[in-house]
Every structure is written in structure tokens, then in C-alpha cells.
Image (tube, rainbow, N blue to C red; front, side, top):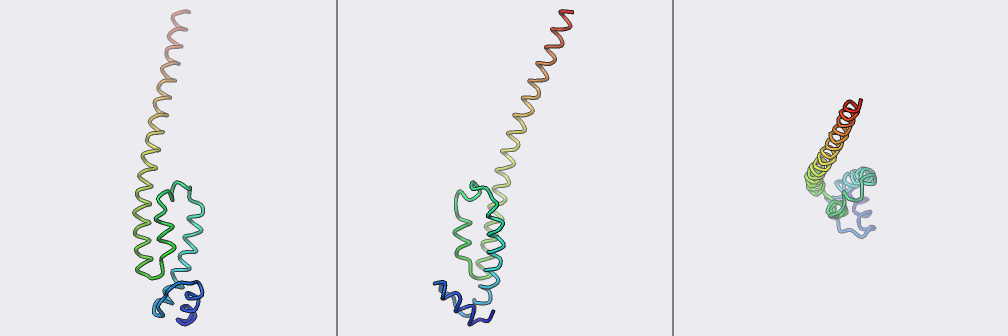
Length: 116
């Protein structure tokens, strides 16, 4: 894509874009399409604060893309921690249920032995 074609395309889409950013615009546009496919498969809860979507709609330069990716990495880290805590809680509940079931089985064996 030439600089003029990139600038014309951006202007047609109603965006203010300087001619020196036009080539970067094409690169970022391709990256945005790739990210859109990834985000389409994410659960709705992931976008609860909507900052990712807002930033995606405003990214036009390499610096903007870098800022977005750093922010995304931070949010992914936070979401990873949230999922880890949720899984740990579920795991702990599961272990408690197994222990309770084991105690019931043990008590059942003791009662059966006492009655025999």
C-alpha cells in the first residue's frame, strides 16, 4: 500500500491520519484483524471493563500498537491470576467433597464391621 493510498483509505473511513503514518496504518490494520479473530472466541466476562475494545478502535501507529499490546499483556496477566484463584477455590472445594465422601465410606465400613 502506498502512503497516498493509505491516507486516502483512512480519510474515506473518516479517520484523521497523517501521510507518514499510512504505512504503519496498514500494518496495524492487519494486526487488528488477527486480534479480532482471537477476541471473538473470548468469553464476555473478559471484556467487562471494555478498555481492550476501546484501545483497539484507536490504534493507528506502531507506538499505539505497542501500548495496546503492553496493556493487553497486563490484562491477560490479571485475568490469568483471576482464573488461577477461581480454579484453586474449585479444587479446594472438590478436595473437601472427596474427603467428606471418604469419611462417609470409612464410617460405613466401621458400622458394617461392628454389625457383622
